[in-house]
Length: 241
Image (cartoon, rainbow, N blue to C red; front, side):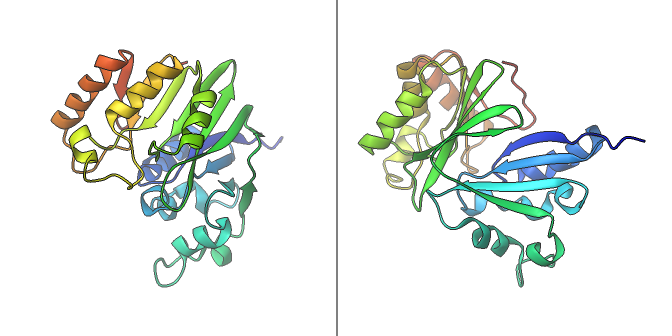
């Protein structure tokens, strides 16, 4: 009997949503998984779901965790998430099949995609990712605040004409007045970037946990007034390119 080929999966960040994603992968994929987990940075809301990602516990799966040199050291930052006294499973001892890969500022080929990390303005460092595959270009930008001239210029170059921009839109314009320097954008900022770079579609995400559906709909309406082809991310949504 032939060993089934690994099923490659790209995942960006590991917030609490990765738990359900892991369950879905186990129920829908039959063969061993080759998982590439690319992290933007190590703030809790981007790594807290990792201990509850079920595919990580199967030694038949390959899990490689990536991060850039724009942030803190990769291996100690992640192993601290799963270590005494925070969690009963110790990553390095109990899950030795997990691998770590430090990215530089150049592109990398993974799962048939060309992935380019780029710096964004966020406290303690962070990055976004440009993903190119099958003729489509996607930008994943979860935590970004404008105001750094050099980094703002860089993202405008990278985003030009992208098929999909998934962009931080945590604050309303009113909220941002007291949150300046916290490292996040408004729905207006995201829409303006989409319009300036002529992307095809914008998805607002990194929603503030205090925002209800009414607030999100209002923010979506404000963004659409600037860039009509905008939607707000929701759990389980899929987008075909």
